[in-house]
Every structure is written in C-alpha cells, then in structure tokens.
Length: 181
Image (tube, rainbow, N blue to C red; front, top):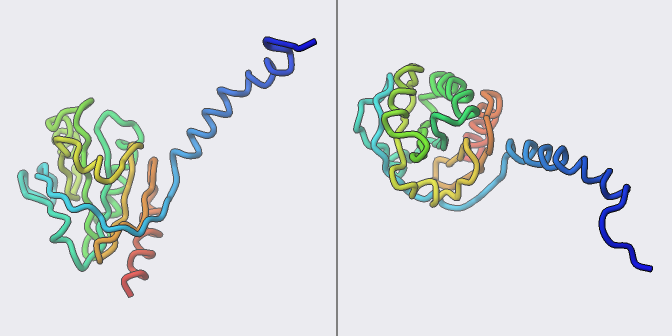
C-alpha cells in the first residue's frame, strides 16, 4: 500500500524549514565574492557632500591609478544606513589612496531623500543617484547594500553583499593595493 500526504516525520521537518531558510538567507547576505572582469564604466551626478559639490560628475574612467570602492545603497535600507558612517570613516582615513562612491538606487526613495540623508549624516565621500538603474543592472546588483571593489586597472576584484565593516574595507583595500604592486 502506498502512503500519500504528510506524516508526523515530514511535519516535524517542515517546522524547521522557515528557520533553515532564514539562516541560509542571512548567511548568504554577507559575503565576499571574487571577480576578474572589467568594471562597467559609469558617470553619475553627485549630491552635495562635505567633500563634493552638487552636480559634480563622478566618472569611473577618470579614477585610474587608484582603486575605487563602489557602494550600492538606498536610504530606506536599514543595513545601508548602518554601514554609511563606517564607509565614511574608512574614506576619511584612506581618501588619498582610494576612491569611494555611493550609488543610490531610486524607486523606494527619491534623489531628494538621498541628498537629505547624506547632508544630515555629514557624509564626505562621493554619493549620487542611478536614475535609470543602469549602473546597478550593469554591475548585476541583486542585494542591497552591495560593495564592489575595482582595482587601479579598472578590473572588478570582488563584491561584498550585505553590511560591510571597516575591518573588511581595510582588508579589501590591502588586497587591492597588493594587487597593484
């Protein structure tokens, strides 16, 4: 006789399914992956930050000679908000040896929301919007925040998905600098 339907054994295992799925999503949310392809070029108009004037254009092609850290974010994303002061501190400590740019996804938040956020938080590094989402698509961004590491030759050296720490930023900068030597 063939059994159909759920039995006690499968029901017990199903109660762990949501926990398992949450754990998998959480653990996959913060990870570093390595790449070795050319970073897609982009230009974005910047918001006003402490170090940048409004409407200044950040052009990735003009950043040669120094590695560039590209952070994809939006203001209503809690991990994005949590990491922004850390990225700003990292930028302040390393701005002579690395470029840092934040690219805001528009949709849930407006460009004005992004400008207000960086002004309120006294952000120093370059930040602007991706009005058509083209930069995010070209970089295959699926998780926010995501940080992309571009070496001084314009190659993508890796991605970090999820909230990033200053320690991880420091470690990735060392890797980028060692790669250049």
